Image 1 (spheres, rainbow, N blue to C red):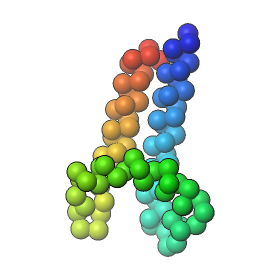
Image 2 (cartoon, rainbow, N blue to C red):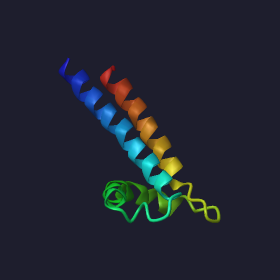
Image 3 (cartoon, one colour):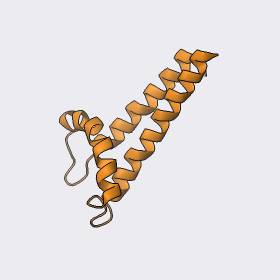
Length: 87
């Protein structure tokens, strides 16, 4: 029971973090959105996770695909948490 609670919390944290990444991606479409206080806060949370993916996934012109790969990895980790904790 206790492990399922921890697993559920961890899974929900991973799920919410993926929405932070999606929000960070969407902010690039709007001028000066990343320079706002909310944009800077989300950037401080998301950029350390995205940085390793940017080293391995080169951009295609002006399109950065590393956040998509990062979200896929997060979703796989969430599936692993669900399988490991039996949620």
